[in-house]
Image (cartoon, rainbow, N blue to C red; front, side):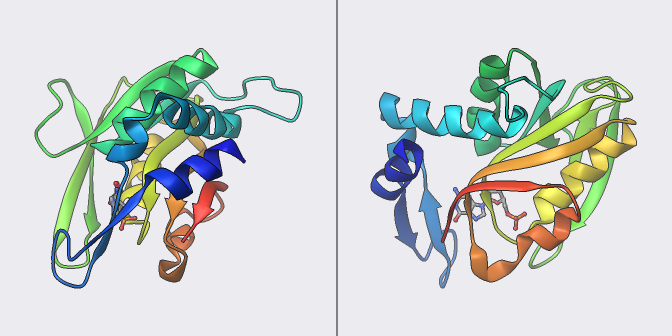
Length: 178
Ligand code: 5GP
């Protein structure tokens, strides 16, 4: 309830960003509020625990760029490591690469091959689930490492886009559907 309240109060709509017709969810006021930021991190971290509060994931993966801001404190809250998924050409070591479709055109995401181990149970964390392209590509990257995406946790889901379809049977935890 504290997390949902923080999201409702502290995420603002920016019309026509980054292009005309898009209403962008700006999370920077939420990040600037330590109580709100802490509440949403704790709520996202619940996706990595079972009903008894036991941690059931081995790694948290966050997607560039706002996913980093949320996934890193979630990893620390769970006491597991963090790994970044980045846009093409940013990661210095050997990577797996996945091409995925954007609304217009294509993009590439990468993950270090040694960022997650074979058999690891991985929680994905991002700020917003829109079309699901980013999430679907990240699931593919995790599987390419031989690991298993066991959950995807986001602050907000744009309900009219059906992004959940892109992650198949990976359970999605969304704190707020808009
Ligand atoms: P998708 O791949 O699901 O279409 O888009 C999700 C990605 O784009 C996420 O990484 C998210 O950060 C970003 N994104 C798309 N729309 C918004 C938005 O309205 N607000 C924010 N903060 N991020 C968005």
